[in-house]
Length: 237
Length: 271
Image (cartoon, rainbow over the protein chains, first blue to last red):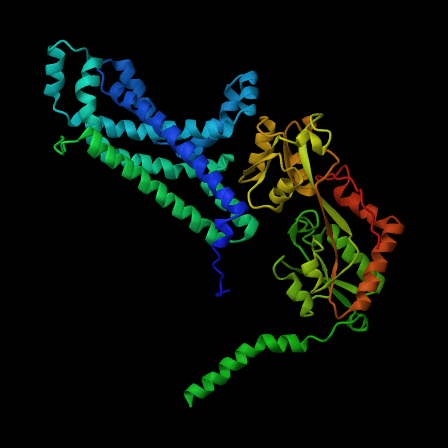
């Protein structure tokens, strides 16, 4: 058995290459849609968590604790199989005719990641001296506007390093969607393995692609940080 | 000197497997009759082909009933030896068992190493669908079909219905849940597994197994290539069982309407 024939050609052309490309496209779609949605929701939850209005603060707290403290795989099954019990029949029928596997995966990944992003952004907001908020409020800005114009732009910049972590985790966590039959990269690698028995080649390719995706994500965010958020090289950090 | 004696011991130990092959005599039919025992390799945990009955603590099943009939035909006692899918062919070629009755699919690769009897069981890949929704294979085109990851069923269905979208789950209960919730139009795998799923399902009257299939896997009894005489007797026995109704009776005993895996018998044992 030691004379294993490592044969990369099996995954660089033909049917299996096509499967890997399909998987890559699905992984990118899944991660990028969830990434944008998770950032927007996370930002809002972070702000809600810091308001003085108690019901909203408690809601945000519950949201965080719930989505942060349950395993992603459980959330995937919950949205995919569990939602059937809650929703009315005609909505279920409508969803089943669409690509509901993909939608359920996006929902689960978005909620799960947004909870972590919210906590990162909250710590960024808390790092801004509270005098800034007091100053902008006394200059006549409302709470929301102070957040929007004064606090958040600085807080998000501070949060860039942990945010990169969250987006990298998101891209990798998207592989979990295979349990509900979403044809992303890991799913396709497993398909190739079971059809060709070439496990090493299949997972070598998948690993390589994941590493590339991760490099690209952290590269893009770093460039955005340097060129757009902090062009003079003298930011708050 | 010490080194030398150690070398002898090691070479003796490594020769033990070799010796065991030599010591097993070529088991032809005369030899089996002389020993007065037919050794048959069977599965011991695969309901209802070969499994241990919890009450009587003995091996029972569809495969074992066939083994019994062949031993009776030879007029010798029957000895059952549990085997696995991985070790069964080596055990047969080395003469540790005379016959294999263990849900073995007849394949060209295996037929190069051992002789197969005529098929005594045909396992088919079928579907479970919601009652009345799917009438033929055509109705499944462009539909979502559930199965499990890594199974041959997955490859078969992709070949048989290329336009269908195959959703592979980790386990059969999940695939069946997806069918119940309308997320897939059908689930597919071996008929006997499907019948098992269906018999355990709640509201089983809402589902059915349509009669069409996408692949057939004939099971054969395995005989050593050195023993063509035994193969002849095995084939003769199972053909007789077909003729006098014993084969159908055995099928009904394990797969009849009252069993937990009810199947229909649409094959006949024939050359």
